[in-house]
Length: 262
Image 1: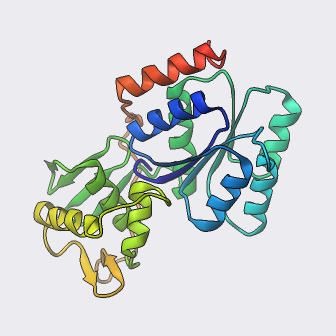
Image 2: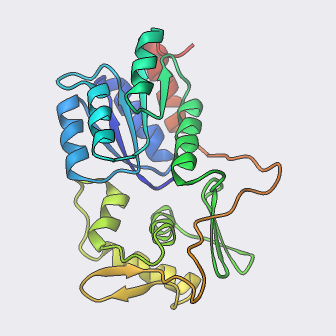
């Protein structure tokens, strides 16, 4: 689910900065908060596709936040991270409804792999591609094909396309798309989404994305066919993600300095 809005709740400034850089470099739209109260406000204000939270957040318990999410039937995937490797804490975190628990020290590549894993479980087993007519989007490889031919799209275009295909038949507002691109508190140009929709239509066909005036944009379901959310990867294919080398280096250096990585 690269390109997805992701909430990062990490109170350590150096580690949080490094994690933000690494996650953003991998294509996530990251909103970073530094304590539990801010995380709680963010979760109440916006919908995120993924959440990464330090289990020891100040001002509000991360475990209690997860319990409240699940109590209101919010199934947003949550990974809790902690420098405390106590078995009891891990059990409490998972029993609260967290999808995964990652103990420090950890490597950036493991965090990204776990995010991909919980996203796949949330979307259904083996879902790594979205197919719509002649358009195929590979979520792991971050590639787009049209009639079997590669199409070059920007990270922003990829995010918009993935969201529209993943929600086929539903109209997504410009505000919803902007939240996914830039995070819930970012300022964006008023015509940003329209510009990227224009380029997607040029590359993938004008009939792919329909404008619903005054509401938003939609990719219509094929007539007479049920929704297609994706297909399993080909046999032997493995999920992969490419981190920007600079961001990966920053994260590694930061966590090594603090004793979070071996």
